[in-house]
Length: 203
Image 1 (tube, rainbow, N blue to C red):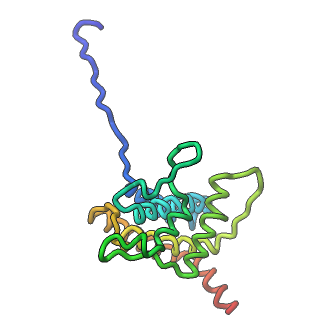
Image 2 (image 1 turned 90 degrees about the vertical axis):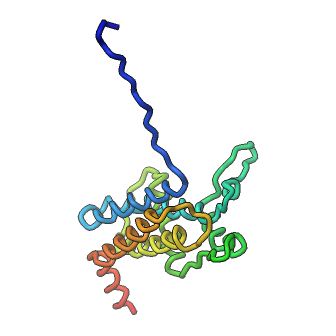
Image 3 (image 1 turned 90 degrees about the horizontal axis):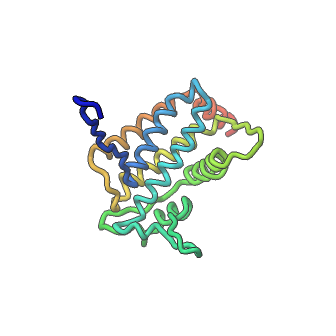
């Protein structure tokens, strides 16, 4: 090394996650893309993926308790795997599993929420995540209701199960604000209002 030149010390930088901050990040991204949906229909793809990630993540947080092994299982080949999306939601609705603390509350889904979550996962997210060669058209008028229902469930899992979900007050406030602002925005969209008007006419 030439005389007079100093060695450059590069300090390591780490991107750190917990199961809670990972789920929260998905929720924040969903909120960002929801803002874009009225002007860019492609944003709905990322809303779907982000909402699924947040819902799955907070379901895991709510049902894991204090032992991460509660949400893991061993495969026949001896590998450890995370329980499925459906299994996590099932456990969150199980009173015996969720009643960890005196105020703990299981998840109770409405018919609309169950239908929205089914569509979110099976019809939308799975097809986006494992896209096969095809032409695919999605009628978007139902998407705001799916998002609204999912956001309400995410808020409950994150802030109202009262299990061992490790969030500080700032994060809880952020979740409530994101859900409120995103739901408010979705309710004001032309897409949602047109869907609501159509459903009233059918009734």
